[in-house]
Length: 298
Image (cartoon, rainbow, N blue to C red):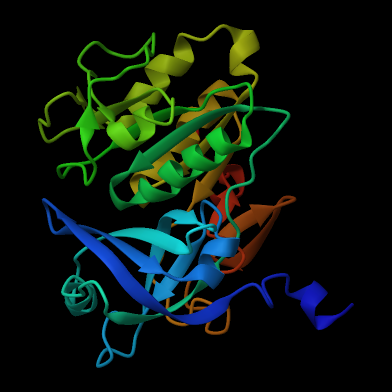
């Protein structure tokens, strides 16, 4: 077996200098950063991430999930919340600045043609991969429209909208959507325990549970859940999926040093074929089969 075949990520990760095109700030010290990085944009897929040098005087890079990419225009978008000195420095970047970027990295989401009803569940800074996935699914032109459920305890770092698309089965207090998702023709609703206007008062998995329970069995049998967010939300998502007998693809969030599989600092335990193994979130993931990450979720 060749070295490239043994390591499928070899030759697909680019080390580039990205140019800041725009940086938009949102409440709660949240930022959306757009970088010109054509080599990265050409290969970017939902669920992957980039490793970004926040400033020249800060050697440790930060892994940031991809919010979007345009292969034609050569840009990538990332969303982050300031946490620590590194991301605080990145928040000072302005258009024209040069930033070192490594990516795209990791195994992204894998849409399942046999179960085409995608249910997207995102929490906090875990929302970006699901927005990216919504774009890719709609661009693919499938007959089945994705459905989205997004939660946050901070104001959402996206413009909200009155939903243009109905979503029967969800609680009546969920009256808002994300404009970026609604504009794709993807029905979505929001949840928060912070009293945010238009959001269901509860967990985002509560919203998904209500909607799934309203489906006839024939339609539920076509569902695959795709999720990204904090660990408690992912665990709750897997419990929800187990209750309904649904497959999941979970995008994990983890601290990383090298982000290319060399340091093994981001390993997580998984169960595959009944056997326990340690997998690197950076290159073996970040997207994993949810039942392997939480085999005992019930």
